[in-house]
Amino acid sequence: MSRVTPDQPRRPATGPPAGARPPGRARPAARVPAPRSGEEPRSRAPLPVAAGVAALWAALTSWLPVSAVLGLAQLSEDAGSFGGALRAGLAGWLLGHGVSLGTTAGPLGLAPLALSALAVWRLTRAGVHVSRAVGARGAGSPRQALTVAVAVGIGYALLGALAAFAVDAGGLQVSPVTAALVFAAFGIPAALVGALRTTGVWALLAARCPPPVRDGLRTGLVAALLLCGAGAGAAGLAVATGGGDAADMIGAYRTGVAGQAGITLVSLAYAPNATAWSASYLLGPGFAVGTDTAVRTSEVSVGALPAVPLLAGLPRGPMDGLGGALLAVPVLAAMAAGWLLARRLLRAAAEERADVGWPALLLPAALAGPVAGALLGLFAAASGGSLGGGRLAEIGPSPWAVAAVATLVIGVGAVLGAAATRTLTRTR
Image (cartoon, rainbow, N blue to C red; front, side, top):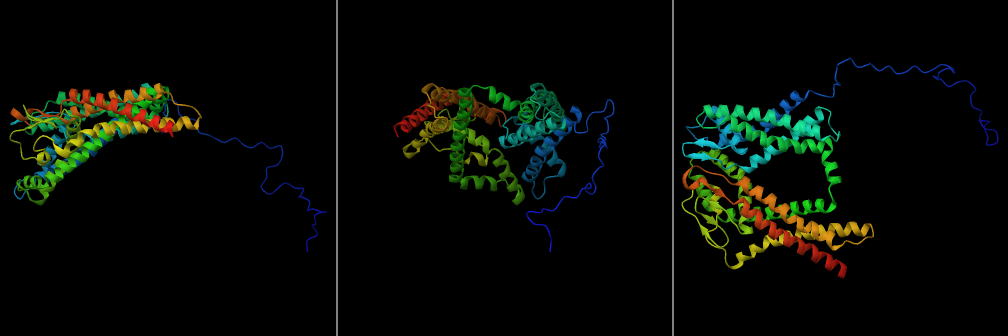
């Protein structure tokens, strides 16, 4: 048995522990290789190289799906080729960025917004990757973020010019200079969003923004998204109601199963356009499907339409009966955004044991109107275009009318929703 008891603890060994360094002997310093003179850290890449690679990858990942879809759309038993699919993909890719294509029937400028959204997302990721590659992550420098965005935009503009050269040689009329300018205007803002978030400038701007302005921007964005969601639901319901006509239009192309699948995918690429048109219809200004035409809640005047499945859901006449309840959708969306604003401010004030004054509540709600109006006006402008010359040269809503009506309706609705929420909460 061990002789160690609580009264007689075991004495520690007097010698140094195994592996210990003898006293008085200094530990050798860690040897770190000194960087070579003039050599940059390996974690950073040259800006032109990083921007070029990121722009090329963004272009490829947004062009390949278009080529696949349009290749399916032109397939039939005796038509279609690999080279034709590639050229059609380049043409559709240019169109998705807002570049007008000159055809024998007139200019084609109706951009599929689903492709535009894909390109914006890929360019935003390009801004993120380039910011990380050049070592600007978390730097908080607006100059670095802008430099990254401009570099990505220049690389993207060169790719757009090359695509325009290829498409112009294939029969369509496209100006490479115009394509380069449009791609630069498209790529720089999209890449700037990703660069601002990665460098931390976005957080700095949000912190320095006054709280009423920040809350107004958020509420306006929420109201615009709610109205677009209602528009998407109404457009989907209309297309589903006219599904028989849409199926007959697709079957009339006689391109086989693969071709009909491609035509269906092309129609889905224009679904965001239909969302913008439906939102404009709910707001009141409506939209046009040709020169001297109008599709509004009080009037529907259209002529002969092309066999496009997306147009199968157009209303047959003015809205009446229970359909008039749809006119309340924009007001309800605005009131819901005001309710969310008031709930958020009241919850934050309750945690701090403070009170929310009327100016702090109504100012952001009123600011939500212009914010939502600007967003919906831009959405309406992007959704329009032309499907050739003649009477189809004007398709889509009027951006200014949509922006003006949305500013008034959403501003008033958000104020009503926020005021009612605060009043009912204090009453309880």
